[in-house]
Image 1 (cartoon, rainbow, N blue to C red):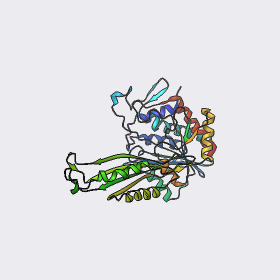
Image 2 (image 1 turned 30 degrees about the horizontal axis):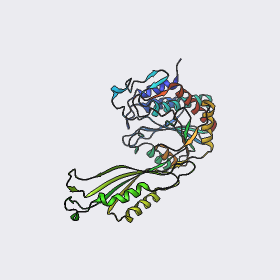
Image 3 (image 1 turned 135 degrees about the vertical axis):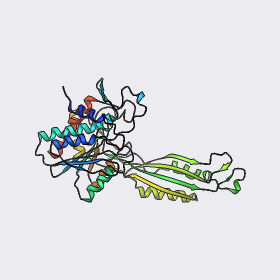
Image 4 (image 1 turned 90 degrees about the vertical axis):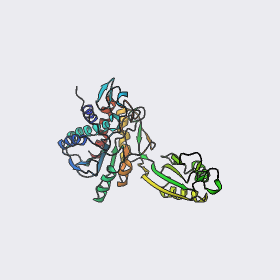
Length: 375
């Protein structure tokens, strides 16, 4: 017995679409969507292929996903070659099976079934597919969203197919994500000989108290949906490699994952005030990779919860933990955004896999969400 979801997922996995390459994945999806009446708009930027596709008019429900995958690592460590999809013991193995070619296949097949059952559906069904999510994420969804906003495109609801589930399909729905901002701090000192410290100024020594205070600071207490903001030092470097030279500079890189209880401007101001209080001579540069977003219970969350309860027979937990996703860009359009996808225990790992039954069930859940919102 054929299974359209698994068949499409396998076709996608066969294509070694290491980010930002697409390797023909989107051409395959375009062919399927065109066949059921979708209008296709290629929106490529730089080295990245993107597709915006839609069918119908009115309130818009978009499904968002990516065709790119992370490197497979040492292929000899895989039980099966990473780009040769294999069904074994009820699981589909291959790079991208869970993150997120399986979800993309489930979305497209759900749309095919939905359109056949509802050829004159009331709302607009759309797809936003990119090949630049796993790497730099600079020419993918963010650029498509900018272009859509520039022409006042409507987007009411968006479901991102990221693997949100933890132990059972649908046990977790991400209804928001924390923001992420990185600081690149250089503390300036005076290079010198360790035997003559009075002729030098050691930036490591000067910065230690400030860094200790930075680590010990409570930034906020979170809120009903978000944990407290966390700050982590990711990289630190100083010195010439010689044991008799006082370094002239100290480089420290630290990242904040922040909730809606805080803003990036407040973070910047508080960090600068702390450094100034310790009288450091420093240069500080910031990189904001995403603002936090939250979709409270409403039309989309209710539809997703109802669909999961119907098919998985569990009530999903609404969480905002984990890293960033392309949902942070889509939320800027004012859309309600949630993430729902397969179990994430093997993503980015050797022998990445997904339950074959889960993929088929996920497609049914996606279809039921379409029926509730735009049928």
